Length: 200
Length: 398
Ligand SMILES: Cc1ncc(COP(=O)(O)O)c(C=O)c1O
Ligand code: FES
Image (tube, rainbow over all chains, first blue to last red; front, side, top):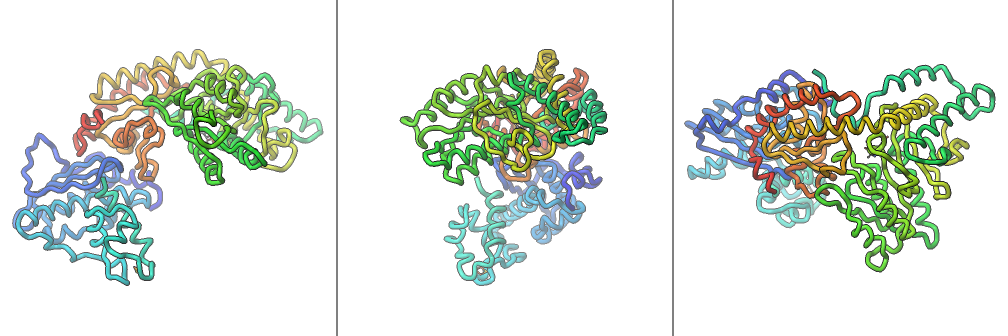
């Protein structure tokens, strides 16, 4: 996938952009029991997920976004995919899974579509917290980024949640990249992504 | 319906210009050749030079050199400053603005990297630079960087259409002994330009914004103002810009410029009323909008609007699906995470910058087209706002 505009006009993407599924409608009085919001409009996008969870399954879902066409299309697709899914499985969905279903995603649009699954996880986390099950799914799908120090993407995410906003602060929080330094490019990418999501 | 409202990005070829260029495709002679065919080709180039000179009030056509476009013209000026500033005792302060086109912005940044003192003047909420701030920056006793080498201010902005008071800006610059340049790529053909009355040393033009071909532009250089060629080679353009003449492009430019001069007054008044129609229609049909730029000191064809709560790229693509072509200041459309530097400089804040749409109209725009946009736009904004996490009024107050 190379051309953004070709992608946007693929029939699947166009359908999800012009007719997004499961969009929150204030008049509908949707009754959810879990909610998550991530992103910030300074960066141009924000995402909200609302779930109705029954017996650890996602019975129904609604979402809202301040985001571009790619964000709208991928979140619409995500919301369809997770309906009926056990929350444990939904928790580990990655943007690439959604991108695949949309027939791929152009390079420069990937950052537009990373908020959906984060908001979904935030909603599930909130649900677990409320039910005394905090952190139950954490660590399951963690990927080691810094081999020298066994630091995962979740650790980076947590550091950013705790306030790290640049490389120095991330290093101060995790010591990442202080041995061979080989992880720095990937770690910086993730840092950028998470700051975009959690930064203010 | 298909509605093109992105004329500030580029314009279609005028029919007259297209025919003139096609006719000239038969002429293959090198306009620098001494033989008859070459001289005839050269004649065409010189006639075009006079036509372009007339568009900007340049009395001597020889003060114009043809280039490959606005970007090259602007870079030629900044490259000249690089040479001047590095001479022993050369001035090294450059004053420009925070809302310039990237080709000025990045040329200026490069000079900053090379040790020049570069000031990007801020603008007010409507996109105008402050003359007092300019005066202060021009006065070495009240600001850093020493005496000023160049003041470069765009005559009109491509995104919000705000027009600057070039005459007053040039007068201040002259009084401080600085050279003055203006990027008039967007002003040309839309508002009157008079290099002599304004008192400019350099002025940049690009042909594809005035219904001529792409890849052609010009740089006005006041007689006596310094200039270093960016492209060295043969003797074309008095040795100031080498390269075999692009006859067809230059001839097309000449005719486009002549027609733009001829039509200027009627074009401006017609477009201004279309702009009013669009603006009033949006204000009436869409709640909670903000019009960006200056209300009156503005290009007659440009309307920049923020729709708080709705994201610009989503608006753009929704309009596109209805056959309406516009542009946006949203970061998403640029592929970076930063929204329009122009809107940010006017202080509207990231929320409004991300949700901004530029409607730029032109010769082909009709009332029916404006009305079509007014019919399609409101439901799109409503739909996007309905699914938005950002309440529109919260943004409008920010
Ligand atoms: C204000 C301004 N300056 C310069 C340019 C660049 O001109 P060109 O495309 O001819 O290089 C543009 C065109 O986008 C412009 O709008
Ligand atoms: S892999 Fe992180 S320091 Fe070596």
